[in-house]
Length: 259
Figure 1 (cartoon, rainbow, N blue to C red):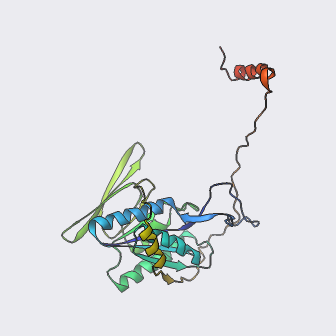
Figure 2 (spheres, rainbow, N blue to C red):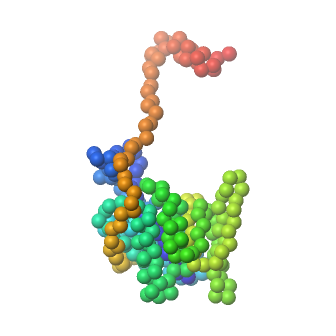
Figure 3 (cartoon, rainbow, N blue to C red):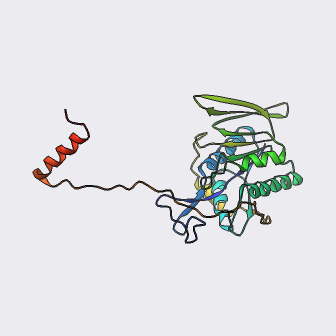
């Protein structure tokens, strides 16, 4: 089984979010980069499927040359092939991103059997568009399901079938369909493994296929980014020692904690 997994290079933001002076981008000069959590689970799911059924996992990303680091992270987890759709660093919109991925899927099919399954994260950790996987499936004419937290792939008589389940309200929805298909998975579908030392060494030596899709404007125009306002917290010193007791009692009475 040939499985493709779409991943994205996103900033590893653990502290205060700072914007660039023109308010067009998040300032990532002091940030590390990683793969979106949903997509890390997608890589793990693809590797587990091929471990059961055989086959190859390919990872592909659209991004700057530095995004090769995230592809190598996926290779260290067990993927066998990596494709970088290299850009000049500009953020591509969901329409253009989907078109670049579709072109790669068709190019791969022209060179061989093509993908039986394409896995995506449910949404990217930075932009949260929720669009790319659906647009890719529509362009290819493949079935697409989103929000998946359980996936079973079976093969019988040379035909592969997928059974996917997602949570919906207080219940769940289950879908059964044939392959090829696009499936957008959510974090929690599995627990991604830690890369082994041999896996890291193999990923470091692996060749990464590269292509340079032509920049395409989606037609959407970004005005500016805005960091949401956060509630300010402050501490009030009531006093020290016995002198603080009356003030403390007053606070407890105000909160209704005293009988």
